[in-house]
Image (cartoon, rainbow, N blue to C red; front, side, top):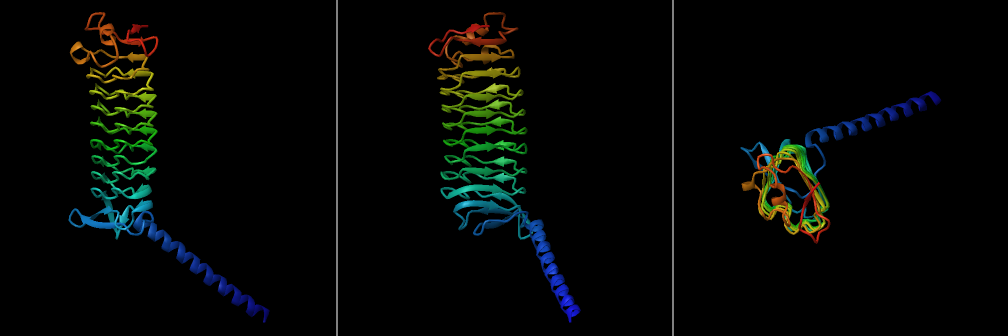
Length: 302
């Protein structure tokens, strides 16, 4: 009798193990097909001859949002124009097949705090996150395009790291990000556009990539907390009012040669341009310039 019971128990154990194994297989298959769990209520539309999907909020208009890598065995490639605009979502994780975020996708999402971008992302549209509540931002190395005003008015944003493929920071990309303190600009960026970081009043730490050649009009204007800046050797153009209103800027290091025609008289407070050209224009005045405090606009070369 005891042997019979043991055999019965062993058979039950085998059945349990089989069921457990089947559950593991099903979960693995779901992960393989869908890439990650998706948020219920998202609305998908076929694009690109029915081979891929774009996604928008549908009924998923609040809380944490998970955008999957795939849907119905097809890749999710895009986030639609205005997809989550004016919703109360709090976080978004974007699947690794997404390559494009369209214009206004997360515009006015004031409760949005955390964004995890796809490592396959190539393009972020105009005003995509304008006036959203995000607190930190890492632009993946895959991103090549960021549209105008993409992060305008993100007043809770404190840190930005820009990846290694973006070449241009366009008009007003980070304008009026008033809590922004630290910016690291990637090594492929060659243009910082007009008003790119205008009115970022708490910006204190800026690292400019070595390939930056042009700093646009009002690019860093009214950055009241900025005390020092280093302009790499490739910078050959500093346009009007680029650093105007930076009243606490007391230390500027210029590592390259800038011609007089490309060095605006209003680029910095005071006479920095004239001090730079005190020597032969062909050699420039490369070096570090200081002023004693923000109340004086007279620069001295170390």
